[in-house]
Image (cartoon, rainbow, N blue to C red; front, side, top):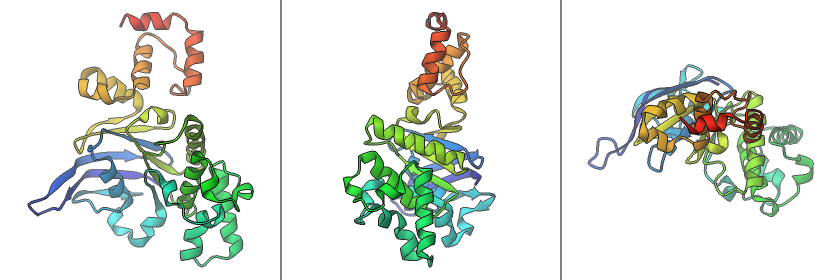
Amino acid sequence: MDIQAQNCGFVYNYGSPLETTALADVSFALRSGQCLGILGRSGSGKTTLVKTLSGALTPTFGDVFLDGRSVTKYGPELKKRVGLVFQRPERQLFEDTVFKDISFVLRRFEKLEPSVVAARVTDVCSRLGLDAEALKDRNPWKLSAGEQRLVAIAGVLVNQPSVLILDEPAVGLDPAGQRKLLDALRALKQTGVTLVCVSHDMELFLDLVDQLLVLHSGRSRAFGTVSEIAEMSDHDEALEKITPPLALLLHKLVKAGFHAPPRPYDVKALVQALRNQPGVLKRCATL
């Protein structure tokens, strides 16, 4: 599903003495099946923007379009088309088995045969790298933190949304949990789901991101590919301070003549490429 924001703005308490502008004139376009990274410090408008993209908030100004259709025109259908995963979604797990938790929305709101529900749960678990058969009768609270988060995400994906928005998806996870999450998101992206990842620390997601939107004080500071953002930071000190260090490093390496691997933000691939080009670090240090 394509996403397009056109001069999107949102004002809390609009028209009152307490009105506060959270977003102003934000525009970008993302093609179906791509991943958008939204980067910004606390208070930059990230959460307000994702709520606007999901239809949880209606833009005060401008508009958001999904496949060319305004989010204001979707109605209840929008909740099925766009899945929103807030920070630490595992805290919302409440059923006594993994299967019940993932399938809750189907059992509660959809008139589906039990066999169809079971098939949907198995499918979504497979897409996230979870073993549905092994986990279905287990208590979610007895799983690892990474598994709990994936189960919570599965409970959103079981609705088969075309867009999945994740707000700080890696926060609180150990390295093993982060790897599981990233592998799951990468596999999900390959199935054609459009992803939106919001993070203070975007470095983890650089290998997944197609476009990066940098917000500052509710406004778009920069938008483009990761390499384009890194290049912009050459002439923008404030942008340089928030651009992921790995992106800045690769930018400098490329300027020094480095031949980047196909997945330049995959750390293992990057290290191997550097070993094969031993002189590039010295040249980079002189820039």
